[in-house]
Each structure stands twice: as C-alpha cells, then as structure tokens.
Image (cartoon, rainbow, N blue to C red; front, side, top):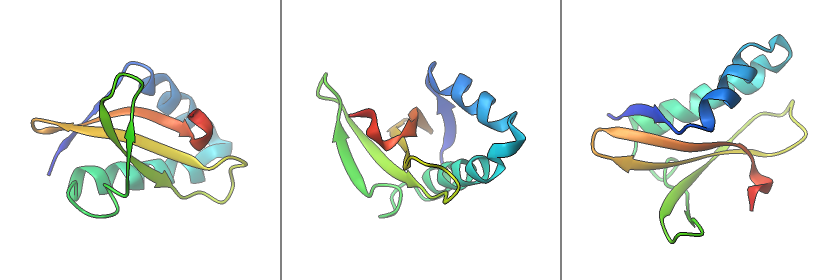
Length: 95
C-alpha cells in the first residue's frame, strides 16, 4: 500500500470539487481512483497507460469514471518511495 501525496496544482482542484455539492459523483470517482492507486499500485488498473512528461519523466494515467461530467477525467501519478505522488487530476484533454 502507498500513501497519497499531492502535487501543488492538485490540492486546489480537489478542494474545489470536494466543496461543490453538485460534483459529488466526480468527487467519489476521484476518491475511487486514488484508492486504486494507493491500495493496488501494481495493478493493471493503476498502471493502465504510461505517459511521458515533456521532461521525459514517466507517469501513470488512470481514468476517472464519472458519467455526470462533460469531459473525461484522469489522474496522473508516479510512485516515489512509500508514496503515490498524484501530479494531476483533471480533464483528459491536458495533452
């Protein structure tokens, strides 16, 4: 099991979604994705797709399944020691 650690740009996104009652389904889906990453970091679901950052660093992309959102959402993460470092939560259109 890994402990979640959040990148500086992730916390404001999570705070805004958590505090918006109209986005409860998205919040629950994000929590589910974080649980998969932290509880089963070596699973196919947690490591479904590798993405290279512009600097050449590999992160894993996990889909966030939520039917109430217009955009497809994803979580990007990498393992660093005992932590799952979550570097992005947002629209799949980040590329």
